[in-house]
Image (cartoon, rainbow, N blue to C red; front, top):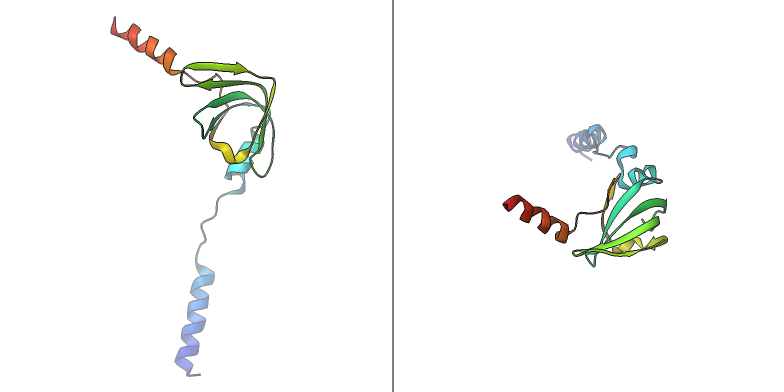
Amino acid sequence: MIPSQKLLIISFSAHIQNQKVSTVEPSKKPLNVLIKSVGGNVLINLKGHNEYWGKMTRIDGYMNIMLKGAKEYDQNGLVANYGDVFIRGNNIVYICVDSQSPPQTNAKQNNIDNDDDN
């Protein structure tokens, strides 16, 4: 091996070791945020465009979620009141944590918009 090549290899490995690897702080990882939100109200939007609102009682590593006192909403409003609901993680589009109230429906929003016109 030529000495200059050896120097280049050492220099390159030193450069890699000194690089800062961007990592997410453990407390800010999505699953950790959700685990800390157990016991609070959440709003879960599913692939079928329905939303569930209720108190999150359990969550696992696959983001399967159990809700207590769950309510199902669609674009027209409340669809059903449920007791306990299990939502499979692969059906979830997004989750809003600390949701204090159920979702605003289009029907309610249309009434609010019509009231503003008067």
